[in-house]
Length: 447
Image 1: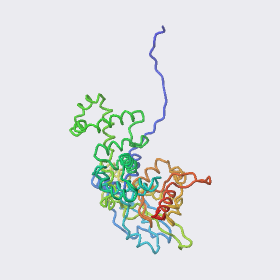
Image 2: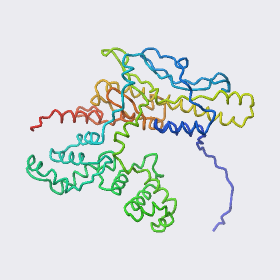
Image 3: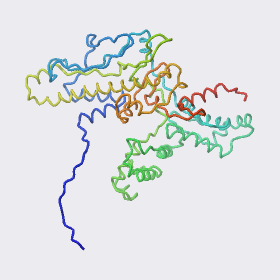
Image 4: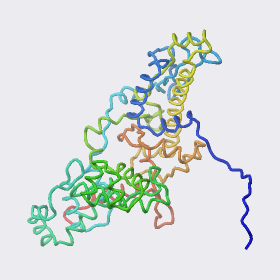
């Protein structure tokens, strides 16, 4: 047997290193408007060189009619140290059109939880009897999305209705089927009878490809461990008491596996219906606004930034002048950080505007005719049009909102899968569901 001899060798590899500036850019891009506002407050608190720029009509050039103006950054010198010139704010992308004041007066009107669920239910192929029971369950949910009454109690309350209209009462199998249908709808966790069931339902539908998921190799172990913890109140109590060593011993797992399971549990939503409450709705601020250009007979829809959602930041001129006079100042690093913040916020809104404009080009008919005219659209199409990576488009379209004549929508709403038609063509699944709802609404109620 040959002896094993130690040896040295060289191996080259490529690895992407994310600079602090790039990390900040990615982080800001994926934030919602509310989260960005909090982050800007933190920047202002921690960095004395940053300040909110005063509104100035001279700094905000009015856009030509029917056009949107991009956000701009102004630097008066190569190092950007002189005066207060280093600042950035949105030009407002304000178009001179008759509807402008009307847009500004609009308030976000997102749909409620029950309407959201009913829209999904209408797309299901159900008998009138099953649909009536599912509607009963939807109406019985509380604002957090929980079903507080037992199935038997709910059945008793509608027994006379079902006997009169459908010939007899619901049987146990029908009760269970209705509950399963309800719990299959979005948001996941809806229709649970208690917190444990709510969290377990979400685990059952967990997207292993989500960016917030544990590493692929560990996802199965993590899900199994999370189910064990959620399914046993003793484990949940130990978790609440932060008895991690005790949990590791009882569950026979290492600390890293437990950490991944705990992180996964923390990402679950204990109140899946709360996002549709009035309080949650009031917190939604549209990032962009859709507006019509031209006459109604010959027009197109364009996008501009929502001025009120864009923070106006600048470099404090007094500190900038002090640093200019003393090049070795200890505040030079803070100046660089301030410039990063201004640039990255500008880049964030530039990217949101680009993606939103591309979406508007693809979904022009939606603005005119609504969901029924929605065309199939995937992230890749917008990524190619904007010359961005799909992951960037995904970040841009999550928790960013567009105000339209038909309501306020998350940008990802405009992406919809396609279905094959009998004629061999393709149609948007959203448009198809809208047609089904229209058909149901027009159906003779006596049939």
